[in-house]
Length: 281
Figure 1 (cartoon, one colour):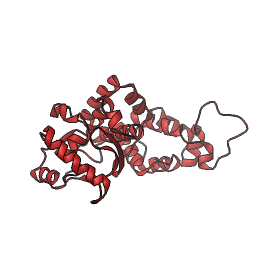
Figure 2 (figure 1 turned 180 degrees about the vertical axis):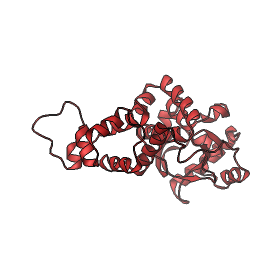
Figure 3 (figure 1 turned 90 degrees about the vertical axis):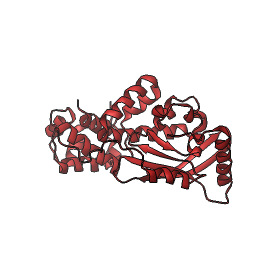
Figure 4 (figure 1 turned 30 degrees about the horizontal axis):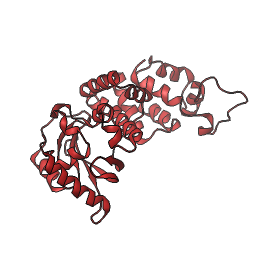
């Protein structure tokens, strides 16, 4: 079964008859989700054709068919784009968005890391490798700076660093979001993504379980709650800024001036300077 077929099968299992306006029927279903014939009828394709797609025997469905399936399965925009990218892979087509070769962090981005202080900030690759960070960024993810630069990755930190479950107050959500993002990255940077997935699947049962769910999302900003050993409990807003070229992003955690959270970031900056956490790539 190819990845597109597996993705459709998983998503079909998550949509119940009531979700699409169908009666549940008098008997309980042996398996959750829509039946293949129900999904096919709602999407306007034959049962045989949809079955061949889900079994991996039809690898080149048209975009109109995929759009119809995405509509019935109630895919988000990120999930819909992911389905189209999976279809490109299954059909052996050139991906619709090909990642550029990794580029060094530009001096302008390094300057921006310093300019936003005391807001913790990072330059990330598509698979969340930490390509650069300001002192507060390394200090906020307690222990990240102890790893050598080549090992620093936000998703690896979440699942493998012993401090992560203490630092992230809502670790379950952070972990789920990281895995969902990695599912999008596997299509644009397949080799780095595959290596990271293999490593984390072997080292973390929690990662492996989340990976099998095949949830998809692109991180665009929000809020994250922390329980930090130096500055205590606080919630920071975050923004994700895409650099030109698309292969690097800047993640910034911030708080409004004059708030207790901003005062905590000033304290974090002082602590980062005292501990030498400013040594970054």
